[in-house]
Length: 276
Ligand code: LIP
Image (cartoon, rainbow, N blue to C red; front, top):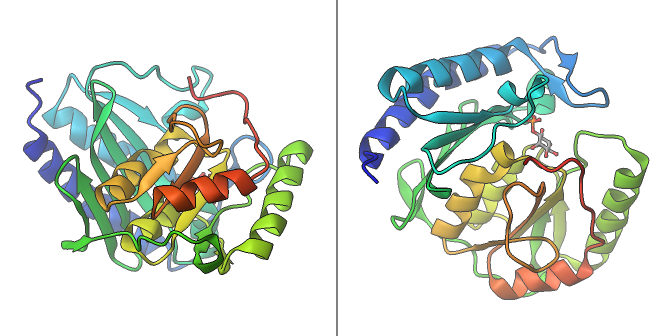
């Protein structure tokens, strides 16, 4: 294709720096919010402002590019279909619950897909100034420094991240709690950072060894998927099969062995509706 990925990368890095200031500034105080889909799925004015800043900035440079965005998709129209066109998959604030409470683990998560292949991933926590970037085939970076997964293979030595999620649906909560109980028995340690994108970035960094979650959306994991793989890790479906970005299911790990071990331990859940 004739997409200038170098230019895309430069422009999105500058835009997330600018948008990050909105998050960092507003994280100093607790935020007003509305519940998006009932339950505990929250949205703030900053989510909307960050999404607008990013989308306006991208549109200015690349008017023909498409978008799949978290706040964009919360209307009646649902999630935009993924096509072969260059498509920016954006979560303006991943970890909105953290942001509402001024718990400093929120980030902007942006992935760019061309021909349905992820070419660019950025996860940026502007509060702690943690920037994870990746381009396909060019490695993963943390604040400009090349990073690698831990390579851990054993469940018993693995630090694992997951989330309670944004719904209190009974069937979903039952599976979530069951999996936490199983994991607690088998893994070295269990962490809940409050952001799917940051959880995955910690796997890329080698600071955590795996992350799994049922109920995520494409915008929560598009960037994280590339960043983990470019750091030498694996991203699969929690059932052990191939990762499907529209399935709302993810399992990232520092090695194929660890991914398969964790997959076998998990009670499976298939969130509805899918993202496509
Ligand atoms: C969400 C996180 C939550 C996680 C969800 C999603 P949002 O992002 O806050 O912890 O369980 O899968 O990543 O809705 O804040 O962008």
